[in-house]
Image (tube, rainbow, N blue to C red):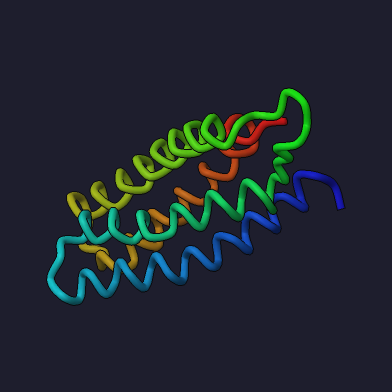
Length: 131
């Protein structure tokens, strides 16, 4: 299996874990009366730390022992920027759907997650954890 396919599968496995936790948190927050937008932010915040650690150390296999290897802090900064860009794309999908359609906010959260996942993988691969 080539590098991008292996990374995509690993990224997907990490994403499945985060999706279950994040979507559960989003829906729970919405169920208790928190707005869909704030619920979305809560769900994504919960999975961010786990996602960084697993993606840095397993998906993209960073080795801090190599000379010239990026520091955890520099990786974390780029990861946070990639996350923010992807989350803004996500929330744009959710917000636009809420404004322009009658689609269930629960389904809009899924559409936002799909947008987030694809964009985040490519931001991580080509920039945040680029070798």
